[in-house]
Amino acid sequence: MIRFEVGPELSGGIDALVKRFEAVPKYIAKKHLKAVMKRVMKAGVVVLKKNTPRGRGTLNAGTGRRGGGGALRRAATAISRFKGTNKRGTVIGVLGYKYGVQSRKAIWLEHGTKTGIAPRRMVGRTMEVWRGPAAQRLEQELKKALEAAVKEAKAGINPGVGKSGYGPGRRK
Image (cartoon, rainbow, N blue to C red; front, side, top):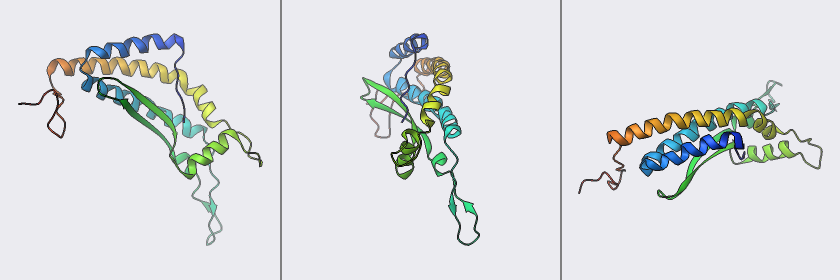
């Protein structure tokens, strides 16, 4: 799992944009913020895959060739979630490997083991390369999303009625 923190030079612009989302109805802001985080984190998967070592694969008994390598690269993924209630909450983005055998393998490769696997710093290198561009992209995406959210709120396109039929746009 990668924890993304923005440096002080970029956090001012991002914080200001997120605060401006408070003027938009919560259900619209939540939708747009989740979409922004998903787009930004998706770009990080490409960088993480580049920094993940190629697998050797297993030896095929019939042909004598190796194949099926790269399972750890295929396990690289990004998740964006909203934690909290509709009134208060945080959008969270996580970049890492799918849970299971591959995530354990990633931990061993990242930190090394006592039995001889040297640390490879896949995630560390990803953060060094990806942190600056991700913060800049986050700021750009937030600007676009804020414009779209304000436009949507003014037009009344999304009344906020879910599958259950309840919400601010519900007819009584």
